[in-house]
Image 1 (cartoon, rainbow, N blue to C red):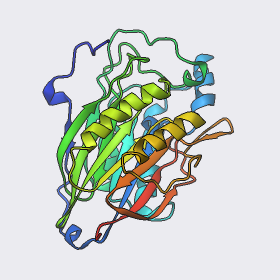
Image 2: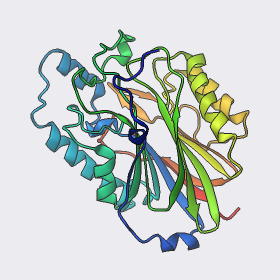
Image 3: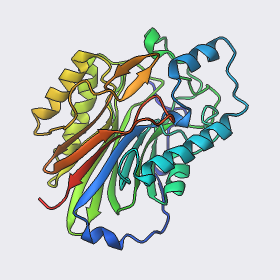
Length: 311
């Protein structure tokens, strides 16, 4: 197994930011809007065509910082305006780059949190340096890699209008793609007297179904320690019917439910539509849910759920 070079220090494994907002209204809430979004470093929706242009040398990176900044503003508008989805209280992000060239040097989670006036936690992946990426399946080879000498990183994040505590980093087992560690994270959300344990996951798309379930097992093991209602959400990369069925069955046998029908489109590329992103819950009721379209900040669409708190 390859490790980052140099490895992340303990201080680097979690990064926090606050916007010192008033959270007093949280004590009177009876519901919470949670959302998940693989933001793909705010690069835009064209993963496949963009990858082809990059491979042929026709991609223009000079305007990258401006494009990414504009996409972050667009995302903030979507998550706060209440048109594509209800105004979001807690937002889970995947592929939230920090200072990479492909993200125009932007810290995506921090800058989106600033636009939304949310507190935030970023969990960096710790990309190995100086190690050439392995050859991948051709349909997964369109993603723009982080360059070997790039000092930036990618990761996952949680942004919140309500208090977060007990933040836990979960390094997932990974074998197929050692240059791209996979992560999950957990936080406890507090809404007045109510508490909710929330897990944000980014599962490896390169692994076979059993490899993905090994990563889900690591998340489920952490979730089993919670004695309060629990939500597991994120990009599970269920890019085949078998992976979708196996992942759903895995979590349902552990007491979780989801309102999302298997096959709900949350990712698109070159006319293809796939179900990659999920929200599963245990111990709470989901009253409403949806996929936020159209939003052209990423190749994924955000998913969301309205969670009842007064059970």
